[in-house]
Image (cartoon, rainbow, N blue to C red; front, side):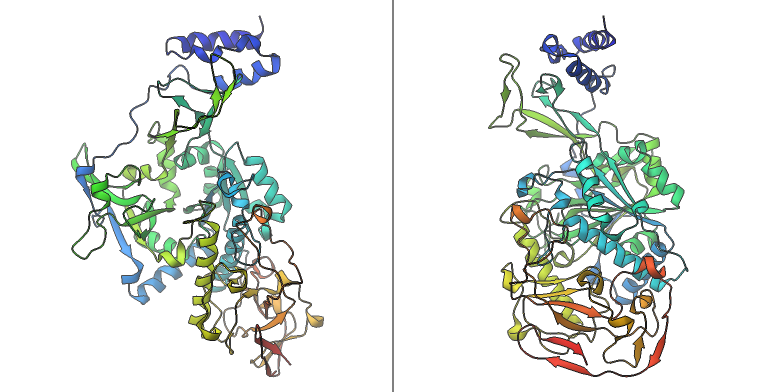
Length: 604
């Protein structure tokens, strides 16, 4: 008898007592390779302990309270004095500049619901540039590194490592996508990929389902599996080796997510929190987001209040609709899967195995092999159970949890559905209008007050390499702008450097090497914009253009691309965030106002 056959019989014996021997229904029909695959899959499950887990986490609704307790405080950015916000923001930049912050993207899902047979992070959701979600996040990371190095120059390249949690379903495709696009300008040794674990699916009687005759039906173990995955893949050790103190963890599908947001990082560090979570105010009781709140829990010291998030599917209707005297929802702090964790807390969490078996039940339609016929079944109704760990269930194990309520219109544009709410269409609109607000705040304006929409000729986009959150745009828009409007960096457009003698408009300097200004804080030259060759806008809702990587544009469209003359791109590789100008000479150049469609500024 082969080792594989012996192993199979041993597992069958273990499973028999737990009514799982049905998974060997077709074992005799399998060839040697299929038996090996089957044996490995079964062997990875802890059959000796079985799946007699403690009940899924169900919360006690009657004991819910709104945030505001010592262990669960909620701060609304809109109510914080500007001076305090600037202090938090600068503190966050300090930690980033010193290499103490990491970014973690939860990207284990596929883009199937969006018409994309690739990892969801490959989906293009930018208004005009055909950039994928992954590219947007990487470019924001590059720009943030530049800003941190400019604020706190160290003479070295700023390290802000990026960790991407995949699943066995999309791991290879995700890694290949980054390699094909040269890691979107990030150092390859700062980008790490790690898969979360798959766990079996069950029927309603608690029996394993078969995906194929030699495969168990499995699903990723939920975003709460991130902690185990960080530990088992060595990513947590890597963070500790680098000196990372805190990690910003976020979902891949939020187009407006501010990677390692320095305000959020600074707020969490200033409050000495183990865990921080970003929230937005819910638009309605029925909005499908969980709510950040607290609950009473008994422990050794008596009754205490613990922070938690209650999923929208688990909160009773009467509580969903409860309101305060002001009219606001009682449970209105919407969870957007955007968190900050102290590395020391995550280390304690995994070492003490706090979250083992804290599963939530989801009834799903699960394709499977019919045991009677051996044929694959595609159910039309829910036929089984998928178990998921929720990342926010770790909150109750933290000593101090804080919440930061931010502006929805500035930070939350999820891409979950192909059409309707939370779709590529709404993301394009929200990003376009955000970038318009940046321009207006910087002193610019739009002809006839036109507002960005998803119409290809009414879109607006500013490259993350030009601005992370609207900074460095003041004085750049002296004439009213038309839509569509697309602002790119020099490096993106491939603009020639005019023998390295680019004149900076409206300043008293001429720069021998403009890229040397990347990272200079004082006496930084003002940038001017110029209209260059037009490009065609992306159509992110189209499956044909969904997998974005900054594709080349069609020159036949009428949409002007705008690029910056002067220091614009994230230049952390060139200057380390602390370099100075290679040569500066006294001179002055005049501005030429370019009238007409897509008006802008050029340098004489």
